[in-house]
Length: 133
Image 1: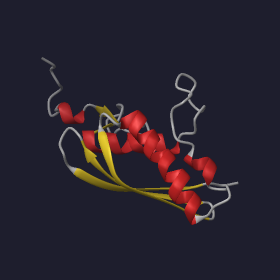
Image 2 (image 1 turned 180 degrees about the vertical axis):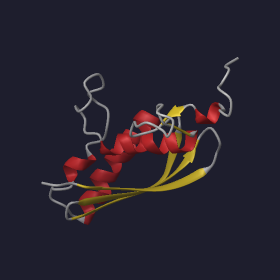
Image 3 (image 1 turned 45 degrees about the vertical axis):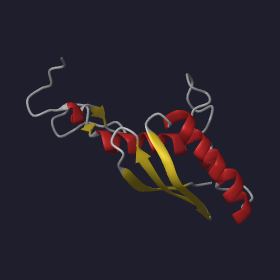
């Protein structure tokens, strides 16, 4: 049995992303749902090869911001690649329901709906990233 400090529960044991200190000067923590959302964000915006010990981690989405763009390319290639990466890295935690990737100049927007496997709850999230050349 795990003993947690007073006022803590199992729900408060995930490290917040991005890493920072809380108001007490300790490592900031977050709940399971926000931690899962942060893991999705890491998969989306990490380029393969960026992590030394996991060279295949990520989906290379940021590289596509300045790539030749068309609705057909976005629908076929980008969304398929993102879906495959989410399945590979987080498939045991979530199931992707819908995914829309849109690029406007140097801004990338991902609208995602997924089911949390542990609870069966459907969650929607929007992720945006601006990329400077």
